[in-house]
Length: 322
Ligand code: UT7
Image 1 (cartoon, rainbow, N blue to C red):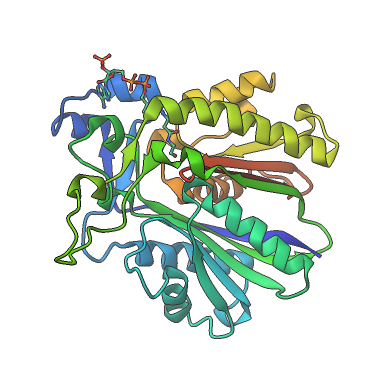
Image 2: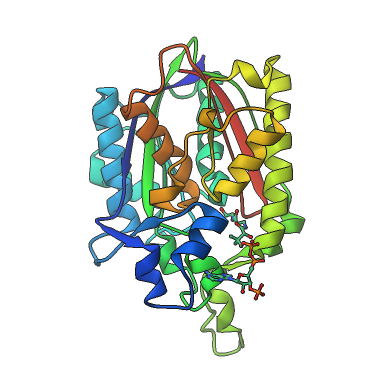
């Protein structure tokens, strides 16, 4: 049995922050951000009650309703995030408690922007092994709390939000998947957890916020994501044109366009929500999936290829029959 997505949900913060709002706070412009990334606005949390947990619960609740399942029907909850509210308990355990998913095992994974794909592939492996039959997976980030708001080259790129999918074991669903990591490249995109306040340790607090070498990440993304997609298509015995929809990690519209060009495909096979979401890391693919699902874009039987890359470095992809 493979993992089949039977419901999706998402949650964006109440506050939308435009590029012009940011240019009132720092030396940047709508023209620079839009032309370099495709981003016009992003959602950012704006109150203490809007948290990683609250957005995860909202997206999860919406996905369960969309799947017509109850929380107690779920066997497994996996949350992909690098911006949990607590170091422990995991966000997944807190979601389990909030939803009342009393029969679910729950844990978080950290694969940064590839996190949702790692969660999806993990669920698929559990289903193939016959261990679980239903799962809720959530990609959620409040990156605004780990971003360095004095670094204009990163802070304009990211947004907050959550996306979720409910899966059940089925004959059809995921057809092929892969994932990979290269820890030796991890220094190009990193954020330390917290400064050690042990009186015997001296630490540099500047590492407590997100650091990114944008150009190195850009080069890695364009090369690795294209390779990853080609490898998945080869695994499935399909050509790029056989796929109806490519739902890629939403980091930069120029990365998405470059991959479309490499695959010799029209850009309209690559839906995008960068314009109004920015880069929401682990949440980007499931938010986009929920948007295209609710818009009626995906028809039963469509072949949908999900692919992403991120800190770690990590990358992953999954091909599914809708
Ligand atoms: O999901 C995580 C993965 N992350 C990514 O995929 C990010 C990948 N990288 C990128 O998307 C791009 O590298 C960026 C959008 C981050 C940057 O674009 P770029 O074309 O590589 O710009 P750059 O870093 O080469 O900067 C060009 C210029 C610099 O000025 P000088 O040195 O040419 O005078 C920067 O200081 O743009 C300047 N700059 C800005 N100007 C206005 C950097 N950030 C800004 C800004 N507003 N926000």
